[in-house]
Length: 203
Image (tube, rainbow, N blue to C red; front, side, top):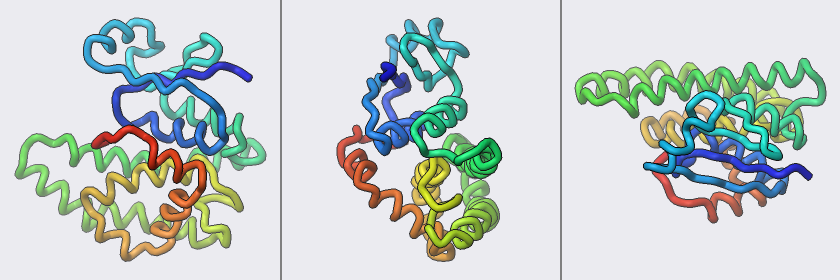
């Protein structure tokens, strides 16, 4: 079994989906959280000067999306062929588009602009994307977002929904399949255990 190290800042952020994959697959990894001066020292050794970084037997892989796809395919949390993997990737890309819109709100400094962005999120952006995900989940008897089993797309959606709940929690009431999907992720024994054990952080 290869040796895995996952490097990220002291928080969930763009590393949490990879952590979910490791936990669900019951694969040991070193969860390395780097901040402050330690990050300044570590940064030059990263592939792109950013985190997260996945180290596999000493080889460094940068890019959160790349490492998630790699781990998901390796540990059975992706599709069963190349086309299914591509379809799952396309769903994940849509979820990341929502995440990008949410980040604009959370990192906006101007209060007037922040209020404007929040209204757009509640009335336009969140309903638009959750409507897409609702349709995908509702089309599957399994309750997962793609196919008959949990995939890393479900983990990606779960983590983004945490940000949705912080800014537009009431939107979930209109999308019962999405809400049920997040509850199903939380009910996975390995994920439930991780949610209880993981360090507290805002993001």
